[in-house]
Every structure is written in structure tokens, then in C-alpha cells.
Length: 226
Ligand code: ADP
Ligand code: ADP
Image (cartoon, rainbow, N blue to C red; front, side, top):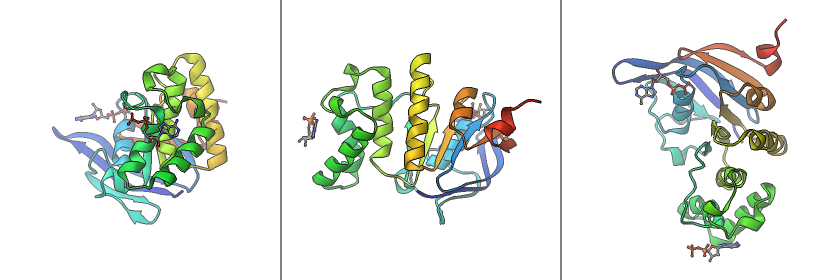
């Protein structure tokens, strides 16, 4: 795992849309930071810049000690979990988990070991031969997390991963992500508009407004009202 450091990070889209206006933030190694704020405040843009899915207009982004501004997503040693699962429908769960490792040139035995380890951790071992369409929403979400987990990345990025689930599953997955975080001490940056998710998961919350940081603090500091 590794730290993530944002120094003066900015994003201006064409048409002079200033989505992110200069963010300074140091996410410690093993820390779980949740980005919150109203729709359009720049959460998704910020996360996508860290992931390498959006170019950085200005500023410096480091993962560990390495400046990664100009690196491709695959070179950044981070894994992203999306809300739409982004699973390959024609592949089995096993191959969904294995795919990224195959592409990175891992040997078959090493792939199998990592897939088994992740599947065990997420309790999806018995579904490895199924296709995503034969899984429940929660199982699919676990496979999506498994795809990130098998890579054993330096950090995880979550883009509203639970927003497509029903209320009951959302609670269950929230607890699971928290337990996983406790066990693995994963450096994580998590975007949500769900206050309960933010409070349960975040070591620290960052409140964005209009592309700037409005407040940073523990869930208690942000949400406790006198
Ligand atoms: P959030 O995730 O907090 O809802 P976004 O990062 O999606 O916020 O959006 C921040 C601002 O940037 C909004 O004003 C949005 O309209 C604008 N924006 C997002 N993506 C693009 C884009 N591809 N081109 C132009 N403007 C964009
Ligand atoms: P395809 O759809 O490409 O035929 P399969 O799912 O049949 O893919 O399997 C391709 C390879 O993935 C197999 O050779 C095997 O090594 C591995 N594999 C698939 N499912 C499992 C599983 N449940 N347990 C262990 N290995 C598996």
C-alpha cells in the first residue's frame, strides 16, 4: 500500500468549466478517505484524475513517492471499483478476476493463487464458474471488488460502488468493505453521496464544494452537530 498526495490539483474542461480548482490533500498509507459534497462539486472528476481516466490540468499527483501525472491508468498501481460493476458478461467469475492479471503477463499458477485468495476473502469461491448474469447484485459487487483486489494495488478508488444496490445490500456491503479495510489496511479514496456510507467507512472525510475543499475531518468532526 502507499500514500496518495494531491498538490494544487486542478481540472478545467473545455468551455472553461473549472471542475476542480486546486486541491491539496495527503492521504496516508492505509487511510480510508471519503469524498463527499453536492452533485457537481467535482468528486468524480477528482477521482478520475487520480485514476488516470481524466487528464490533470495543473498540479501534482503522487502515489507513494512517484509522480504519476503522466502515467496511464494501468501504470499507476491503483485499482478502481465502479458502481456499474464493469464485469465482462461473457466470462465466468474466475475469468473476470483473472483477466487483468493475464493482461499483465502473470503466470497461470500465480493467477490462480491470487484469484483463490481474493475469492476466499470475498466469499465468492463457489461462484467462480458462473457468469455474472447468474449472480445476485451483491455477488456481482463482490466480483467487482475482487477484480480490484487480485491486483494487490497500492491503493483503491471507489466511485459510488454501492449506489445501484438495494437498501439492505447496501448496508451489508458497507459492513463488508469496512471489514476488508480493517484487515487489509488498504489506502482508499471513496466517493459517495450517502452520509451513512461516509460516516461508517471514512477515517477522514473531505467535503468538496464548487471544486474546492470546504472541510476536512473525522466523521464526528464533520457530522456531529452541537
Ligand atoms: P460530482 O462527481 O461531484 O457530481 P463532477 O466531477 O461530475 O461532480 O462534475 C464537476 C463539474 O464538472 C460539473 O459542473 C460538471 O458539469 C462538469 N463536468 C464533468 N464532466 C465534464 C466534462 N466531461 N466536460 C465538461 N464538464 C464536465
Ligand atoms: P472460457 O470461457 O474462456 O472457456 P473457462 O471459465 O472455461 O473460460 O476457463 C478458462 C481457464 O480458467 C481454465 O483453463 C481454468 O484454468 C480457469 N478456471 C475457470 N474456472 C475455474 C474455476 N472455477 N476454478 C479454477 N480455475 C478455473
